[in-house]
Image: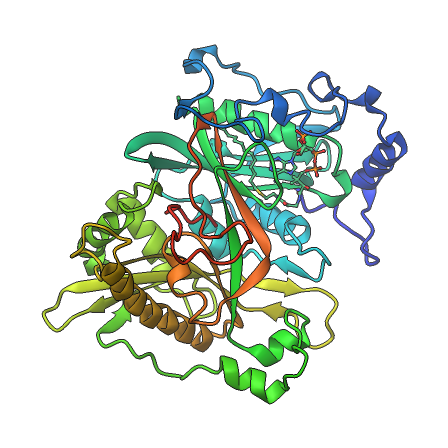
Amino acid sequence: MSGNNSEDASGEPTGKLAELLKLLKMNGNDVTKLTQSQQKEMKDYKFWKTQPVPKLDESVSEEGPIDRKKTPEEIPNEPFPLLAEFEWCTLDVTDQQQLEDIFVLLNENYVEDRDASFRFKYTREFFNWSLKPPGWKKDWHVGVRVRGTGKLVAFISAIPVNLNLRNKLVKSVEINFLCVHKQLRGKRLAPVLIKEITRRVNKYDIWFALYTSGTILPSPVTVCRYTHRPLNWDKLLEVGFVHLPPGATKPQMVANYALPKKTTTRGLRPMAPKDVDEVHALFVKYQSRFDLVQDFDKEEFRHWFLGGPEQLNASEDTKVIRSYVVENEDGKITDFFSFYSLPFTILENPVHKELGIGYLFYYASDADFGFNDRFDKEATAALKTRLCQMVNDACILAHNAKMDVFNALTSQDNALFLEKLKFGPGDGFLNFYLFNYKSFPITGGIRDDKSYDVERRSNLGVVML
Ligand SMILES: CCCCCCCCCCCCCC(=O)SCCNC(=O)CCNC(=O)[C@H](O)C(C)(C)COP(=O)(O)OP(=O)(O)OC[C@H]1O[C@@H](n2cnc3c(N)ncnc32)[C@H](O)[C@@H]1OP(=O)(O)O
């Protein structure tokens, strides 16, 4: 049980954890009390220098694995040592209490924006969807608890993915939700978590990983920019997510971002289980244009785009993933798009507690299938028209679903619609990394000056949560 040591009414940690935190604070940077694997001099990339990743600014001459080929038998059976006060745990996300532990840890300690006024609000439904795709392993939901009290203070997860890098299959995992409790930061716990998840994944004979981070590490395979399309400009202003530009008035801004209630694409409807075969085929064909994609089999496709079983009957409030198709007059599906919901908690705002956020996920269209070259002028125009209409409808649907802003990256073919549909460039950039695999750089949809790269678009076809 873990719920017996949280916080008192003042928000201060109590009990054993408080003692431990005091101890750690007193230690400062004195690592003499830390275990073997953490006795490292703390300087830049001290950890990453030791890992099979390309050096910063290394130019890749040949794509492929970095480490020599190993077997699971060569990998230690025992977890990496931890400070005596902590213990490893494997979280069972089918268990309500353990799911709750992850939920509390991430809701209170996961990524905040720079001025710490917004925080991701992960929900149980979101974890069920993101941590339990087909082939998920309980062993890959790794936590660190305070020994004795059971309080969960760190987490990291992996899910299986088959990556396809320029037509080479790279059996991998995706790493996500790395989190260390705020009061245990800077203590080198993150490298230990990373090594432990690596060990656990290696034991399944998997040697490569895909992950993203806002921070720069050695070495990104591509970088994308976050973009935001305001759906509820008024509220965004009130919570400080946007500002009134000089010379503009509030009504002007609201009018500028106003959207109709009704979608405009004829034949647009929610994707149903019966569509899976047809949409999967359309999707695979569309994705083949990109350098790095995830190969979804049909079961994975069903999971990621229709959600787990509980998502099929989910209420509007708890729905995580929404997928739509466009069916033409002949009953053929010509387009598909999806977006997911991941709200922000708004910190320190007297009126608004939550910000509804939609994220553009995957999409596909047959608009340019008739052309050999995706960058052909006519092909570009055809796809641009279709995407603009489709993603505008996605914004309308997101708005109707009470989302306040719609986010997209500059990946995929997004550069074709971002400006036209009023997606403003955000402050944030997302770096994509491959572990133990060297890849030539992949275009991320931004130019050197960080503006949208409409000409080259992006060759990145994976979307990470
Ligand atoms: C084959 C299978 C392989 C599987 C593994 C593949 C690799 C997976 C890699 C993980 C993919 C994660 C994907 C996501 O989930 S990205 C989301 C990351 N999570 C957050 O941002 C939540 C809020 N922040 C925190 O919880 C902590 O600040 C974290 C946990 C991020 C660091 O904790 P802390 O602040 O207490 O630091 P430390 O003293 O323990 O450790 C310092 C060392 O850690 C390096 N660091 C800092 N941030 C990150 C980061 N986001 N990815 C990789 N490394 C990171 C840092 O450069 C330094 O190393 P070096 O500079 O000395 O070398």
